[in-house]
Each structure stands twice: as C-alpha cells, then as structure tokens.
Length: 311
Image 1 (cartoon, rainbow, N blue to C red):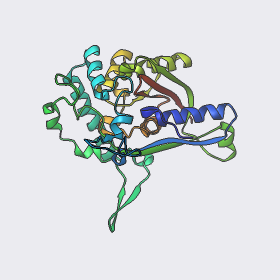
Image 2 (tube, rainbow, N blue to C red):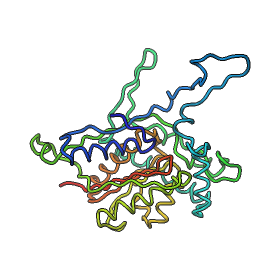
Image 3 (cartoon, helix red, strand yellow):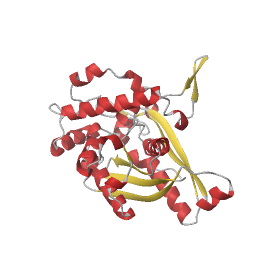
Image 4 (cartoon, rainbow, N blue to C red):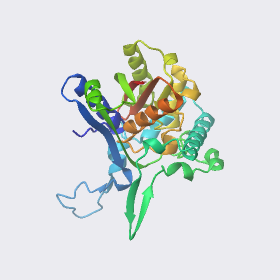
C-alpha cells in the first residue's frame, strides 16, 4: 500500500508493517518511504477545463501538498515561528542547535558512520554517471553566515533557511519480519519494535506533537525518558527538536547524535524511515539498548516508535 501521511509516511509504513506481522497477516514486510522534492510538479488548476480570457494560475505542488497547513493555509514555517515564541526558544538557540546538527553530520560523514546505512545510487547526467554515496547538504554549510540570515516566514520571526530542514530528494526502507521467520531464514535482526504511538492536537501546534507522542509511547512501554539511550527526533525545524528536548528533558548527547534533518535534509515521505534506520545503526555502533524515533506531522500529528537492540 502507499501511505500519504506527509512527514510521518515512512515511519507510519513501518508501524503498519509491525501491526500486520503481530496480527498474523504477514511474516515479512518491506516498509519505508521516498520523496523527490526536486521533481514536485507545478499544477494548472484549470488545465482540464481550459483557460479563458485573463490571467491564469500556477500552483507549486510541493508547497500546496506538503509544506502548507491544510486548515490555516500558511507555510509550516509560520507555525514554527509561533512555536519558538510560545516555548521561549530564541533565534540564538535555534542557530546554535543548527550549527551543532551540521557539525555532527559532517563528523559522522568524515568518520564513515553512515556507510552501513546508505546504499550507493548511480544516476546518469547526460553521457556521464555519478554515484552518490553521501548526503549532499552538510557540505554546503557556511557556518559564519548562519547568524546573519534573515527570517524566512515572518518579519520578526526566528526561523531561517539554516535552522530549518532543507528541501531534498531521498528514500529509505527497512525489512521487518516475525521472530519465527527471521529464525527460520537465518536472519539476525538489528532490533525489535517494543511499542509505537500516535498523537494529534491543534494543527497549528504540530511542532510540539512529538513531545506527547513520545510521552504516550513511553507510558505504553512502562518506561521513562531516562531509560532511553538515544533519540531521533526529526528536525523539520530546529525548534521542533529543541521543544522536545526542553519539555522532555532529553540530554543533548542523546539527541540526533549524527545530526538531523537541518543538516541532512528532509525528503518528507522518506524521513520517518530514514531516522529509524539512523537510530538502529547508532544504537549498534555505540552499544546501546533502547532508542526512540519520532516525527511531527503537518496537521498537528506525530508518530513515535520505541526499539530495543537484539543481541
């Protein structure tokens, strides 16, 4: 099936696969997501019926379908500015967080920490071929420019092009299986899914929804924030992760340890599967046990998954 749940699509696909296996409807499932934002088309709303005398209209499907609130038709960044204001998160805090996200991503790339979780992709450009093995966004950063950038969404706002996630293309997928299937086929799993949770509130407050999805998730598992070794909270905006860090009391050394979407990009349909994949490999690398992956979703929602590594 195809899941259309904006930023939560990739993780929701994993959650549905988990449920299908637990219900006995499947033994093994490939679940993930993809988004080619650079190929998002422009739309001609009257193209089928014909244009008459006067000006026509062209709509950006990426902005219309993915980056604009469906209920209060404003860009998502407007609500990120509101979140920063209501949570008391300053421009400086957001910029410092973004800089650290880039630094962590660059360090992880330089140390080859993404190698196990990235499949090289070869693309043809004219007569030549290019093999992509690294996310391209981290190399573009100019740290000295970050504090100088103007707000993007509101005149007096604090959200900029640098402390928000970048527009990207990407895909990610995971293979889920029952314990019995994995044993029969000699497969050694990275982790097991302990619990999953979804939360929704006022659409304008989507940036804080991960806080409550994580609280619900941990309550289901009988755990606390202190019990979790690593968190991957999607950086739709720096303020999204900062709000969760602030309200849940997540230590920065446990949060997005290899950088997040501010530095790595946010191809919206893929990000849920991507952050879970990154979490699994980080848990394995650092010998940790429990991890949480969570994303905010336009429309006021959030999804979250708790995993435990399997030895």
